[in-house]
Amino acid sequence: MAPASVQAMHETSAGGAVAIYLGKSAFRGFRNIVQESPETEAYTTHIANRILKSSSLKRPNDQPTFHILDLCTGTGCISLLLHAILAKRIPKCEILGIDISPKAIALANQNLHHNVALGRLPQSTLKHVRFLQADIFLKNTFERSKWDMVISNPPYISPDGFNKDTSRLVRKYEPRIALVPLRGGTSRTDLTAAEMDSSIGDTFYPTLLDIAENSKACTLLVEVADLEQAKRVAAQAVGRYYWDKIEIWRDWPDTKFMSKALINGATIDIIGEGNGRSILISKTLKGMSTDEV
Image (cartoon, rainbow, N blue to C red; front, side):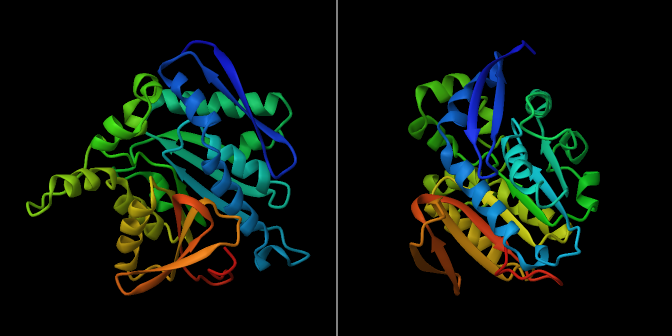
């Protein structure tokens, strides 16, 4: 990989900044994605602040631990931002970022060490944040671990959406594997061409639900392309016995605007302003309520 050359700064609610250091490689397209995707930063910050408000962190003599699995981590931005916000209150915040791309993992590790070297993340981050190359569609050792939260910004753009809705710069520089699922779709023969195309964009979500359930997570937060995809993912979660509560978050979930949608017989809160951007799926476990996170 060529030497890193582009630095993008993101102010965080932790009062500091996370420097995303990017290289001249096939991943240079991430410069545009990182700098122009404040929506990903918004839901990451929002979930971190909700974790910090959890009553389980208010016991004075507690030293809580929190284990986060970041799937399809890419450049590691979500993992680093989460740790920057959470670590001051949760010293034992352990984060593992997973990506299928060795180049992405190399860049995520470069970002991690770069931020520690700048003093924007404490030295202990090197112990508590790790990145691992793996294919989430295969059985992996990380699935046998217990995770409190699973978070993911997976490839979710359909082939047709990639051709019609993305910018020329994204199509030229962004690795397609980071945007469009390489596998997937459905074997059903009764779908229209548009429905078949959408099913390819939805490829990752059943596996993300499986991993969260198998690891006994109480929270799954995933990014989506739009409100329609959010509703399709919500419908998948409603059909599983494991989860208790589902929320769809728009681009700016911190605002007080809220509406509701009836999806497969379940009433789903739609929170915030803007387009549908992420979906929070949660379960009540001992010591933690879905209302807390």
